[in-house]
Image (cartoon, rainbow, N blue to C red; front, side):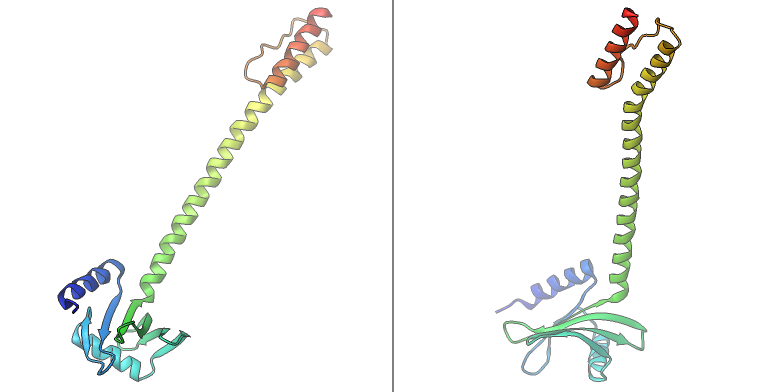
Length: 178
């Protein structure tokens, strides 16, 4: 009932997009229904499976997850093999190298974003702290001049918060009164 050409094309799209090798075999006689691998690659997969070149990571009733070492090609794979609902067997394989490469790219991206966020945060903190400290420094200079009896010193009320500007107005009133 299933159009094997359509299934084959869909599996090839998955292989090309996600770098996953796929074999679907009959659950009764293990004949290959469709595959994204060439015949010699299928023979190598069968040889690796029969020779115990796999290390099972997790095994459940209908599937297992394992690593597979292809000694001839010196390549490690992550494999998932199990029985699908129609009784057929599916074998999925992806090189661990491509998984590691993807993880490295992700880690690099996260580092760059993290460092960028820290730098932007530091810049914002510096700007914000200067906007608070500048008016306070001006008030300190005005109070110092007043302490030396220079009552011409005035706060201009630019760039501070409402509370600091209000304090500056009181400084000006005090200077005028004295």
